[in-house]
Image (tube, rainbow, N blue to C red):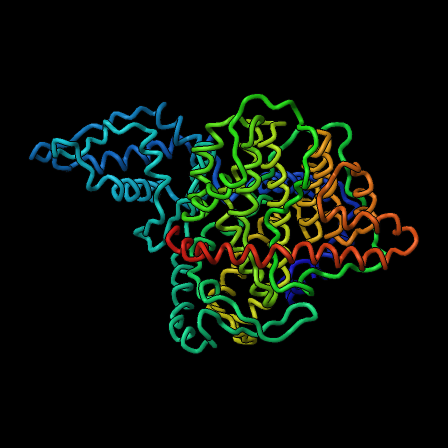
Length: 593
């Protein structure tokens, strides 16, 4: 089946098709029939084009004026009747449309399901929660007409969620820096009630769990492995943003949001279709933990820089570790906001050690660890991670646009390719467990998973929304979707490879890993063999001796390289988990939504 859930047509439609075929045999040679079919065909094409442009988020160029009016109405309602100088009087809001549109019109996107009336409610509640108790030094209340639009923008973006009078709920994204847009999403009241009902037994489930100290014992079943595994309580019983995930839904994926375009050179690498001689073993069969958000492809010793370094900020190894540890005290979105504000916007992107600091920050502070329990759990964990990482992912291409071909910009471009890989895997996992999620909700399947039905409901709803929108865009299979993501990854690595030096080598190694993960070992070998002798990345050095054997014994080379890459990945997993638990990554997340 192309997409799970698309079953065969019911008998009524089968009979209807028989009548259509009969009518066609009688009228197919008539001119009027051809004319009508031509009109229908072109109309459907036009409709498809229009639908392909549909997004969960509405375009601000079309609705900006309505958003401005909603904002002004909210401000006017807030200003009316507020006490000022001991009296109640009606003030006038003086924010100009030009100022509002400059900040709001270019920096906010609304879920297309949010009405103008609901926008007024959202604006008003977000601003009231921030300004309610603000006063001047003389004790008088803040006059909204004196609040700059930039401050209003900050107040709006700092909100969390708003309960609407309809019973629905609106969520506000947390943009990273001014480059990112504020995004508003609406959760339908029925979905909100459903997720609340499915979470009623949380406390009972905690009592039934097999808890030993700080660990929970869980049954595992993934790949060729099964048994019992211990998972930290902090991870297993974590508070998940179920409502927020449902509200954003398909808008979490770049294939729905849209991919940024990069200028490509003539030497762009093309993804080739070849069949492996033998299916590659899956990492999940070998590892208890997995980190695949941001790969480390940094050489152990750097050769000459892309451009001669001028005066720039300098960080010792000890200073970098100190900065990273201090940042770990915050939730990751706040970490990234702080990092871009006090480092990325202050120091030269191409000189000094900013690129090194950025690389270590992205890899050591923003990576995450996933326990290999079963595919259902992994699918939810990946979707949840994508929910938290979405604002950060959106920042990557914007930073590159402003700092193209700089050393720091290059680090973000590598991470953008990794982000696409993560999104692709997330979709694949959701696709694979969709039927399981439906079976769980229909009581046809039970798994010993905390908040099982709530997680199943989120997976089912998000997948069905994704499936609908992807079909409208012309994606009719999971293979087509994976191919699109791969094309975007290949385009980025091709662009990086054109820059030469260590950047080229890192890009070629990462591109080879992409082919390897897609079970195309010949392409991986072919790509890795283009890497210069100067590249000193440890994993590549271990793999290199086997590259020459692929023409002699592909299966033996594949087996050996699989062991090397699995070991290389596994050595950092436990170290990363220890770091994240030390700084209570999952506990801090609970305060950020």
